[in-house]
Image 1 (cartoon, rainbow, N blue to C red):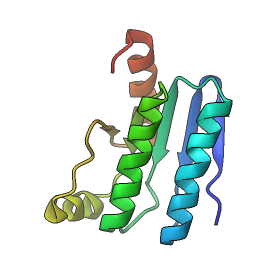
Image 2: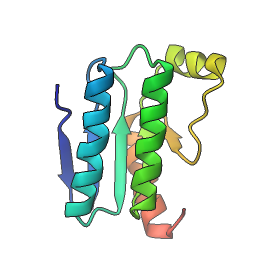
Image 3: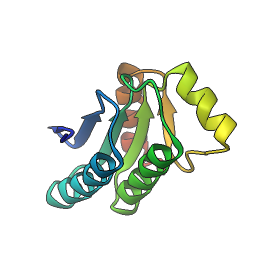
Image 4: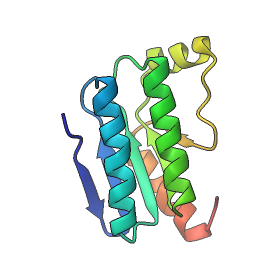
Length: 121
């Protein structure tokens, strides 16, 4: 399963619409990094609204993908985290280090635009 990566002006958007296998997650990570290299994106949104479950591996992949995007110069916002996903991440002791979050895609987009305009890291 390939996760589409959309480019809206200088922002990349991915929306993970279903659970992924470990191989899908690694392919997603590679696709994002490759797309970032080819674009002049200043921001990157990861929408996980449709994900009901995030296991330890997927949490690690999301965190690493966000960190890679930041290293490549993009501001990153993770949005749409379901309450059970947040609860699971906390119970597993997984932190999304250096990843800004927003309640939904609309608020995530606004937050990212603000971060880009203010040059926030």
